[in-house]
Length: 311
Image (cartoon, rainbow, N blue to C red; front, side, top):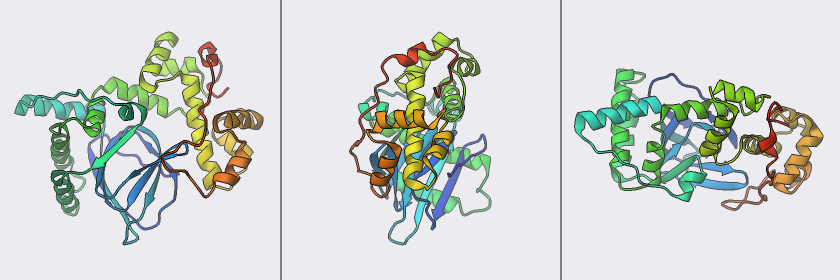
């Protein structure tokens, strides 16, 4: 799995990759705004695939993303990515508002923004120019890894985004100003594959069990138990089609208590056992079309108290 971690300051990175790893899990501890210079990115939600094309600017929220980088004509994938925390975004927006009297509003809301943790759109000419200059900026020793220079570039990027007309990109970026929300979600994402009870997770978030469940629904639009199972099944699906690990090994790695339980939940979500799913999906993923029926867990998750999330 590819895991990228960064310092606590805004950071701008250019990636040029020749050896691409296929579908992999990208774990982001911060939000990202990126620009695809060469090639394209496939973002997966179960069997549903969305393409971020060359020349697109995209947003990815903190958390887990199942992605695949596809090389361009020159057999190279290239992108420039800017990472930031909610606290850093809040500071930049305050500076733009107080220092330059820029009125910052966010009235955009659509189903796509609510449902997915990423959005993308063709970059405007101004955005293309920004990333072109940023590519040059990253080649200079005086500015690369320079916190002050990075902060200036990040401020410029945020300014270009918030001064757009209504768009999913602007809406997503401005929806992450709340640092408490960012901290809450970061704790949740960091425990997806941990055998931990709902009560202990609520304690880590400094919430009572009742307030934790309410806030969880507000962030993730479903109860904790159902959401955690869905995330773990998505990971198991990736491992089934991209590795030769056994069914039992995958179940253990994805924090299911035993193989039979894993098989039962997997079949309920995808309509097939893991073995059959592996054979029929290893070499094909349907674009923009959900193959699997959605899981129906009813209200069983509401009754969890000291039980493990994995159960």
